[in-house]
Image (tube, rainbow, N blue to C red; front, side, top):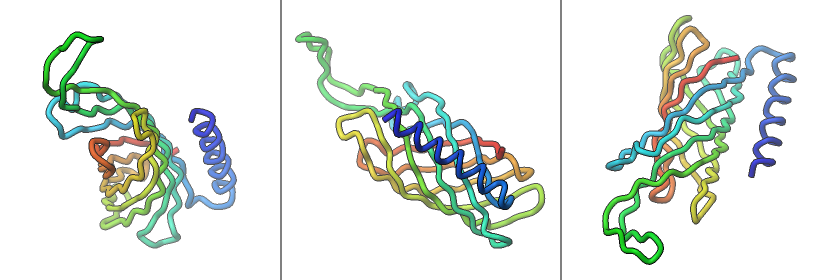
Length: 176
């Protein structure tokens, strides 16, 4: 999985540098993710992750498309009987940490734009590689956000995937 991620990042960065020379409507965004779980105790094992995105703005239209690669540690809360070896520990909820690497093509539509502020909504569909029993999940991702000073992005995405892998992601990124 790590070699696949390295190859994808190399391709992403190469494409970005070539397109940046050709025109300035293609950008790279780098930032931090924080997963948000809505389950009880769902925040206990969440960890900040990294995100990298290549975005292209279509001329003067309000549409943009991108490809995002991200990594984060998120929490699944599992209910059941728990054992340590053969010793019964009890029944209840247990928060467990999982690591996820996501590959997400997406599109955004800018609802309101000025030189200093922009609000947008969008959606994506992609693949989430998690360290759990199933390992790979198709995800549908509605997203909304704001862009400030044409550089800073703050957005919220919700990964819709088979239970219990659904999660929210709050991302703060900077356009390079």
